[in-house]
Length: 291
Length: 333
Image (cartoon, rainbow over all chains, first blue to last red; front, side, top):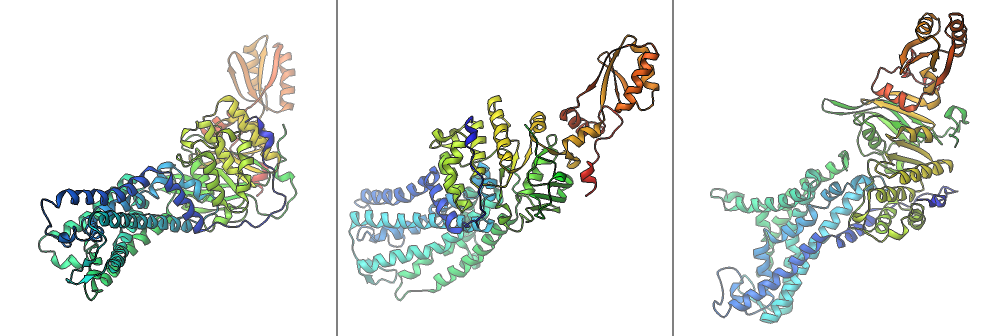
């Protein structure tokens, strides 16, 4: 550092500083994701799982045509069924895990790297950083689900063809209508996933530990599933987060059954709003004493 | 190297001071990490914030930057409260403890991120800041591979992006090799000469003595001295070392002499404190008592002596003058 003579000169006139905002945080958080391994771990799973599923179906259907779950008998008739079956089985663990990889890490990693004090002493309010990070975690979940759905549609169509689909009511819809229903189902599935994002953000801010937040988020999701199968707790079923992961099935009835979707919206809000609100307040008011 | 003029020598501008801390307290349960700190850093000061480990320096700096909420008291940076608005940090930069960055991003990318978070024209200063800290060649390497010294330097570069009027540095030379420490000292000096106000905490007392015009010395969360280093030394009283042809007799003369205090033998020489007039009378008394003087010299009191006296001792340095008193300028506030 002997070239200290080159120290930057002082500004001559004071000009109002143009302030960064939520968009700045969001853009840079997305860029940071590009450089982190966990990003590719989650997105990799989002791509590989549907491919593995299609391969498994390919080798299995000669021996055993069909199964005992919704859409099982149609796996060999239309590729559009694949994303729906993956939603059915990946609902409670796969997507919550992928979602938690980023939502659970996004604040905790700042504590781990000691960088919270670095960003909080720049020109951004804490709420702007919180909102930017929250939107990033949600974006990641959306991308992961869209990726899974798209890969499943493509790989499934290669395997079983881009054909019409039978709804849960037994009616047949065209392939294009079926494709529309697949993406609408993914959209509805985002309601509980957004709740998982909020829970991940809460654990990330409260525990300040990535591993604890990621595992904790997945555990909470599985815990709801466990509560749902306990005898004597059937009355709770409609209000459990795990139940809302199946709300998208209402779209596959003729006529569309909106009641599970509406219920998913308010039940998920019941979990998401307190989780997000608490995370927000904790982040806003916490002392940054470490790092 | 000249220190900036003492604040009382500067014309009053009416502008709020860069740092004004009043009654700052931070408690963690029963532990009082910061116990009622008052300090003022005036424009142009190079202000040393000193104290042993665990004295509450970093907690105090974090409160100044709005990272920690005080239990009691107020912080104002250029008159604004950093807890109310991040705009209070507009003219402020620095780091507490080691500067930290995203290890998976390159040095340049980290600076780009921070410049984006700064807004304004901060991104225009990236190249200049990298050049200043001589990291241009390593700017594209991941920070995870940087040495400690390089991280300290990129920390300074990140601070310079904000073109600050106030620089808060927590142990900026920690972990640097001697050349790095020298360069860091020169950089701080140069920034101060350009008009930047600097508040730095440091364990390197010689560095603080060389760089700073004012200091606060903190002990167990409380400031035991705040003011100019010169006032601190003056308050410590002059200490002399004496050697004579008959030290036994000289010791007795010293002990009996009015105006002479803290008489003792240190490393075979007589040590005492007193003002110039009392020492002149003493030298005559020694000659009259037959103790001819081999040497009589004032001993230089270093900031280190004063620091240890204030933080480990009883606040008295080699004499009967307590130094834990506010400097005249502070007392009059």
